[in-house]
Length: 544
Image (cartoon, rainbow, N blue to C red):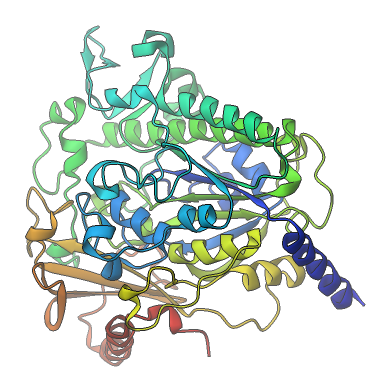
């Protein structure tokens, strides 16, 4: 009887979608790892995201396809992998290099939605045609907060009373240029859009809001420091350089080194480390910046309720990639490690993930319970977001790209997550649903040894590509030769390999790829990695 009820409820949701397209609120947080309360990370105070998660499906193992803003966003917004978009750096536009691929917001725009971009959705500049892909993707010109121009400005107060361009940057907002901050501006603009669209209930909308925090600089209202007393902050559980880490895998966190406060520490290149006291300060400010961003999310959710949009809007909250907080002696992203590639993904579907109950005003924002999360451990990739939102909103789901997919404008290299959502809601993940058995990511390098541009090599400088595969039990990575002119991978030109056994090494500190006892396993994983990427269809692997 219970299974029949579940089936009827799901059919009711699908009928509702088919009768009227659901709106979309896509929230993307920059450089956000899944260090959130709803992911079991107790130090973080994120009540608003946690409240959203309590009425959503929480994807516990979601992976970006490349741990850097431009390539990751080009990938998930086109549902194509970097090897298809050919966007490996911050300076390449997929429409010029990879193909004239239809984007997620463009697909909605083509299906009658009015589409809005607020803050950072596409990586701005050359990576999105210097227009944020307008007018292809957006109905109106994208909004960028005016105060983002001060990202590299000396606005951070130092102990000597002078202003610096710091990484650690708690501020008095009233003392800032224009007396505000970028994410504050984006929130207000998004709320104004909600107010405007609520006047036209028959017009579906796609609203994408991109928050800059917790991206560096860690600039946020200083009152958020009060949430995280420094004596309660701890170092990463593995703050030392792993002894068996291949040199090519190391990222020297050059973006931190250009900040005034880090420069004054006289940290050696390329390994550092940062002094322990400053590691604690960076971690403290990352936490504070995350709580600041969480409050912005809370205002968006409250706005949906106030304008009676919660019951007709799919909400997707996600990060574009992770960020190292001292693990392996590293900082920032720019790697293939779990901390750099794993991201939060939370999907709210009215009438489905909130147990079929009608959402009342303030029901998302004010709900107190945080104990009943619907969590799935299915392996998920950000290329899956495009087809998932399409299906949930009631528009055409792009078909899987064939092997000659680069010539097709609209197709997907991901898979809709609706079956996983349904399984998690109705069966609590206890069914026999078969799903992907691996998630794939990659990262480029200019050389075998760390150098100044190792973190962010331009396309012409890329000589090595690191392909990584995350399975249920392992992370396996190969660093192989890459030709930036032909954009071809030479799998026979192996520079280094990594194998981490998650059952005994969840922090990925002990590379066992070179041990004789793992030789057979390495051979199996290597064949699987090669086969998936050579076919350009790594998403085709599902559990046996």
